[in-house]
Length: 154
Image 1 (cartoon, helix red, strand yellow):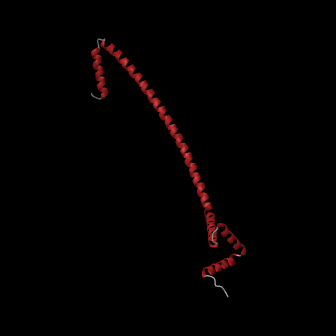
Image 2 (cartoon, rainbow, N blue to C red):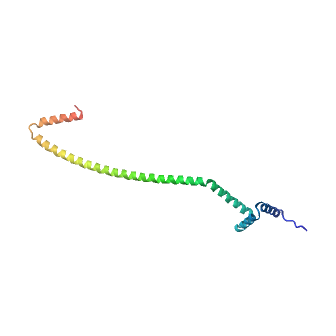
Image 3 (cartoon, helix red, strand yellow):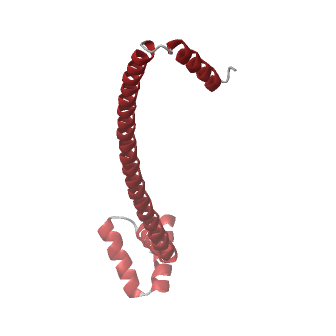
């Protein structure tokens, strides 16, 4: 009596026979061993192998491009770092210039203050001289006329 196997088992047996016939005995043993180690079906083990092969092919196809892009990106990052260093140096120079300018402005203000003080002393001395002079009225009138001329009043 010939015992009938269930249809799913027969289909599985047929698929195994076809794969065994196509890949050869050695490759079939590797596939069976791989499936056993991973604890998956032979079909899943074959799918995993094909997926890994597809990923390797993609890496081979795009690897040089990715390396070129990585080198380009590295170049851009290095260039940005050089620019940042230059900008920091420029900022430091500008700060030093600002500090120097502030010092010069302080010196100028101090000098102006001294000049104004000297002018006030000279004015007070001249005022004393003019007031004691018999020509005080004439000097005052002349000075006022010159002031109006400087202001553009007359």
